[in-house]
Image 1 (cartoon, rainbow, N blue to C red):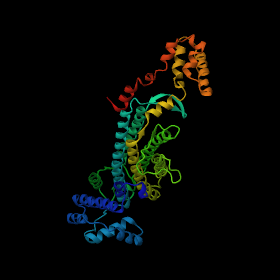
Image 2: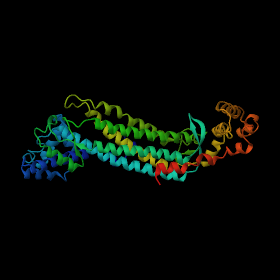
Image 3: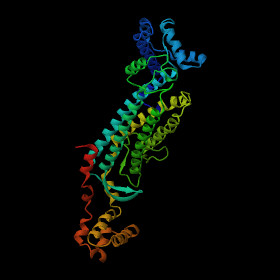
Image 4: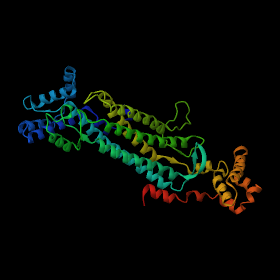
Length: 434
């Protein structure tokens, strides 16, 4: 991923230096286990750890790979150059390349998950803070983009919190599912390596042994992992889209923080554009791009092929780096989001009480009017608001069929805004707990 949409912490996780360091640790831990089992001499296993504090020469490994056309062999050759060919004699004993590559990928995805969870926690904290701040800040709820009934800005933040909390729980599950390793040798039979080596390596790398591997770790795990990231990205886009709507000039119920010196347009100096939320919409598309390829990677020929390899070399870093950046961008956006309660009330009152139509409808049915007639009476007066800019309550009070069923006091009571937020505390308790 390009530096513009990257945070150094996540980028470092996918660097060649980090990858080779993990390769080394896997090989060294495997040697320790082999020595404990009496398969290789203990001094040879100990000698491998002499490279513990060595910075592996990425250029040298690339140089060797240019000849061998095999990345793991290139690394092992370089390792032998460091610790000596004799002491490197038992490195990779009974192992196959996928043991190193697959286990390393899962180590990286687990560590990436931890960074992503930190980002999600920041987003959740921001959403909760703003939800509490605007718990009773009235705004109009919309369906199909049209005014529906009153809600609160706090409830808007609360539903986004609940959605992101579900995403976090899914990521915890996906992290657990991807946290497996395989040191099972060619075609996964352990013919040339004891299963206890795998158990030791996985324990030392913070993984669980794969239940059954072929020559690779099953890719349904990875498909679920990237699908989870895709869902999280979609939830982020859901939030971003709502904010983009709120920042529209005709709406202006909220807007992204516009910093001193910031410019909105090269041509129009007055512009304050929702650039962060638009950017998040685009980043969500990039994250979701990995989902289908990850699912297609599940199907491999027999015990192994490498059709998945090129895909994962791209989607592993690109997807986690992008989502990590996006989470922190979203958190910062929410933390600084500027809210305009007065504009929310202005928008809600734009159609002069029209949003109370359901309350009047229900009151008429409670008063004995059939639902069909109640709907006809309410809609008849509502259309005058749409078409002539009339005041809904005034029209109802002037309609003899309505006043025959409802008194002026009963009609007046149906326009009390507090009615619509009487259960906010109940909803908040469900979302945030007592």
